[in-house]
Image 1 (tube, rainbow, N blue to C red):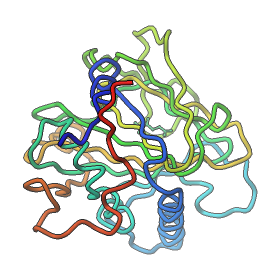
Image 2 (tube, rainbow, N blue to C red):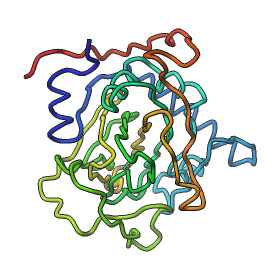
Image 3 (cartoon, rainbow, N blue to C red):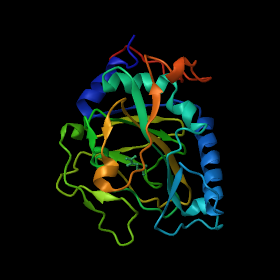
Length: 281
Ligand SMILES: O=C(O)CCC(=O)C(=O)O
């Protein structure tokens, strides 16, 4: 049986993304937030949290309190720690990603928890594959789990439907003074027709790595947070370090022979709440 509904398959082909509302209980994201706050606090007192890596936010947080997490932008390489490992290996995630990648074994090569504290920058229009000099270059599938709600005020994602069929465009450095590390921007494409992706905690966006997307600044008084994983075929050659001199990627097997690596049984709750409907509405 297909892991994807006909509707989601069609949306993937036509638009380069689809969403699964209520994919997990919001408590799953809350557990991720709690864990990542622990990591950020440990790192702030000099503890070694490797392979995890905290990237600072360049815009001063408008939230008061001086807590270390208010200065964080992203926390990379968390996928081999719980509760992130259980999420990235759950059947409901890997079966969908594997099918979109074309079947076979897949790895999770990038995991990032994204804080967007009050006042934080949004990430300009980009295509994720700009960051992924891989052989083969695609397919690469991203999943964006809403940990908090994502609204127009707190900096939800915006996507340009159909732009996944574009090649990778030139990306210029983010022109804003004091932009976040690694932020780049597509400036040679018309983004008319873009759509905001408003989400509730526990909703999941599944998107193609060529899809043009951005997020906007958080002008609300509350945190907007998300957990993002990217998947590619096992055996993909990653030339990021060779070409860029650094990498935040960390390749981990998440699906082998149609199941968990090592023949382990799926973690509890691993089927997720996503039951693909075969309807085409
Ligand atoms: O969540 C965000 O603010 C941006 C995330 C994003 O653009 C990405 O994961 O590629």
